[in-house]
Length: 362
Picture 1 (tube, rainbow, N blue to C red):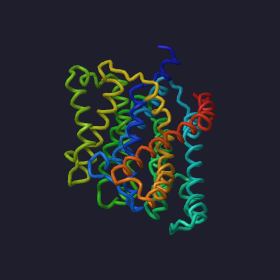
Picture 2: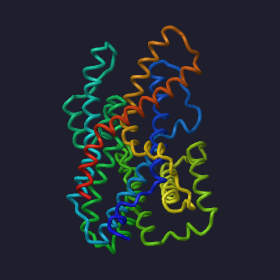
Picture 3: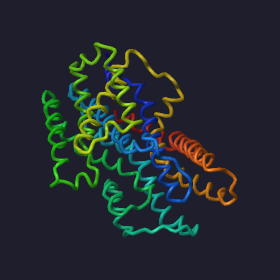
Picture 4: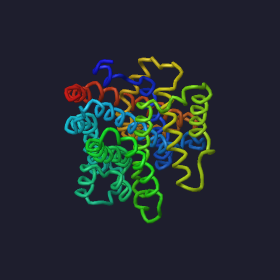
């Protein structure tokens, strides 16, 4: 296998997964904003309440892909922390800071100019510092600064993870990467669920999801997960269980640690199944894959789109044109359409410029 193939081989089934996860986050947030604005909403089905869990699968997926890439470079003694961070910066920073700037402008200037009441119960300097230095999870939990800024919490967790994982794996011997990650995953999982460290729960420092994704990636690279590929029933059970996870409450337990353990293991198996145990079923839809490519934008822009749509619907509701059911459907359709439009334009005319630069540091 050439070095180009070694590092550029794509896992096509994971692109549509990104879009599906971003969509689950969207349908989780839409009812919340609708309810807050006095509009009709529907959130009774379990799938409308799995937005946080969808983000957790994003974390597993990120850990899987990033650590897989680092591991492959380590095997060739070609891993560069400098290039790693530059590539992450070029992918994450431009859109992240664009949303940060817009978010502060929206809540501090745009809403007041429109005479729409919103209370900013924090010092602007504190908010800027926390978001600039990738602690939006702390900022969001402490001050509830508004959905556009609160949704950035997950980007903060990923950036914090990148800051930890690159130096750790760089200095470790490549023969010890797996055992180190296993110890780190188990150890941090235990610490996270100790009452004395409740601050980790409060601010959602759920790094064990990312670490666990990396463990599965290295196990696959070492060909230690071949037993999962021997029988068709295994991927069917994993996919079926994951569908049940998002559509029912049977995997929700009273003890947080049990729920998180089941979630972590199931999501790792699911990502591995789509990537390597898919029985030759490859999703080749250009449209779905494009939606996966722009999923970062979909996640980042969806709250902005929601605000535009809800503002429009509130004006329409003054005339009582639609019944509740039509209003709910209309809010969801318009939010999806506008979000995808924003994400597509951002990807094509903004993010692509930085992605082209990113390829220079491969």
